[in-house]
Image (cartoon, rainbow, N blue to C red; front, side, top):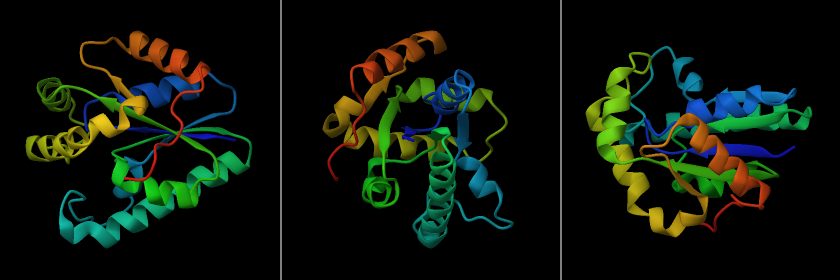
Length: 175
């Protein structure tokens, strides 16, 4: 089965889209990559250079889980801050995947993440930095992007379904 990687900066709507898609199919799995960081007793801030080894291990773990579910016939919707810098790892690990990058303007991302208390690691500094990293190369990945700024959950879902039905979201070339 195909793994759909739903990426983007904090606040872009990744978890909402992944959960909605998984709920729509009998064999759907919403794999929330942030959960894998919560399993660490003493995690490092994943946005810092010191966390490189930790991040590589966590990515290996959630990709192994995605492969296990997909190999068992489940439709996997993997969401997380899985930027294009992880594409070489995704391509080496996932036999069949699609790459969706949700983008949102910075003000909306800051507003959304401030409203939710479930993700204390999404500080304004981290949101700004992750947004900057995704926005930096957005033009290279335009075919993978859905801009969620100002869109309802239903509108994002409709755009995803439309583009996926047309063969969209093929993995982009290496960064």
